[in-house]
Length: 120
Image (cartoon, rainbow, N blue to C red; front, side, top):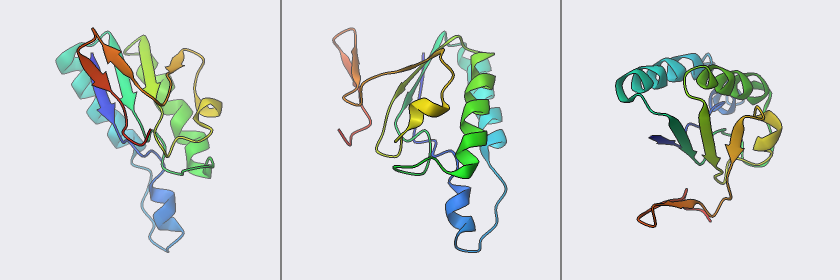
């Protein structure tokens, strides 16, 4: 299992509003995660909160980057779950159906380990 958190896909657009232009870093992030997948060989990925950057809305960059990010990940790992964070409003609209959206209250693994973003 590979557990990742706080990706904040689309954060570059908030800088763009301030006049700072940075290209999307999502392809770079994907490459790093694919290297982790090759190293760890997980059967499941759990993303723990703040998959996207905008809090309540879905930003323009997120409409492009988030769905393609998950489609590519699903080519490498067949089971992906998301524990939503405080930045993940309307996240379901961006997700492929194969991605499991868990409750924001998180989950426990083997009654031993709790996985939660922390805002809930």
